[in-house]
Length: 132
Image 1 (tube, one colour):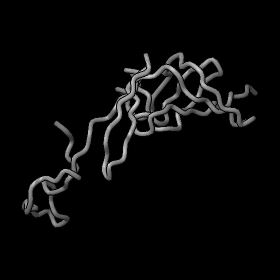
Image 2 (cartoon, helix red, strand yellow):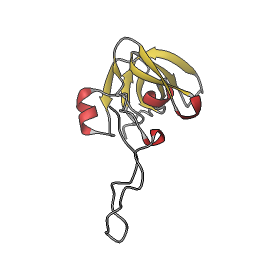
Image 3 (cartoon, rainbow, N blue to C red):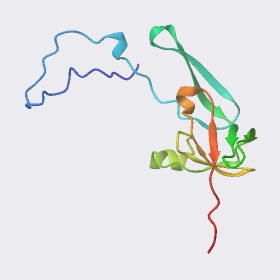
Image 4 (cartoon, one colour):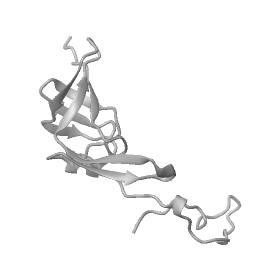
């Protein structure tokens, strides 16, 4: 079973019905989100349109963290998922998506890659808020 991204079932801008003039096509088929979580490294390779491959991270415990001050990048362990503004449910379950804030030994970092699409977790260290 998969997600269907066609628009034959929708209504016209005028509000009238759209009659299906053909069946569903394979290129309109989508997939369910990977919903990357913290745990032992687990990846899944999927064949996509045009014969290309997409690597989905199902779970991982390491991230490539970049420090914008000195430009250094290193692979460190993810301690926990602090928050995920993409979805309240993801926030509760600790799902890692783009924009999620993770805690690492180097400090808090924001995920910049799309783990369910890119196959890797990249993040940038957040600036420490100075007390005035």
